[in-house]
Amino acid sequence: MKQYVAIASILINNLSVIMGDESRVKLDCHNAENVFNIFM
Image 1 (tube, rainbow, N blue to C red):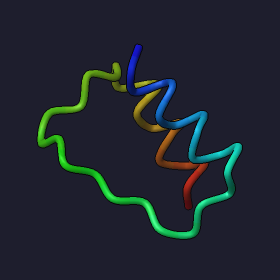
Image 2 (tube, helix red, strand yellow):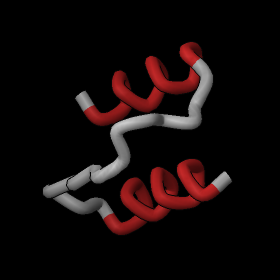
Image 3 (spheres, rainbow, N blue to C red):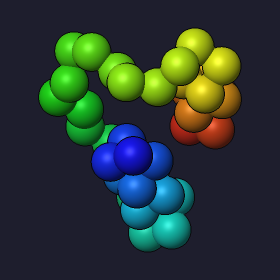
């Protein structure tokens, strides 16, 4: 759930730089691809 909140915060605040520090993402494959597409 924390990942979704972090993603929503990035989108709401319109940040231009996004840094990630987790080597293991807890999103399922479908949602991980959706998030990736949003940021591209």
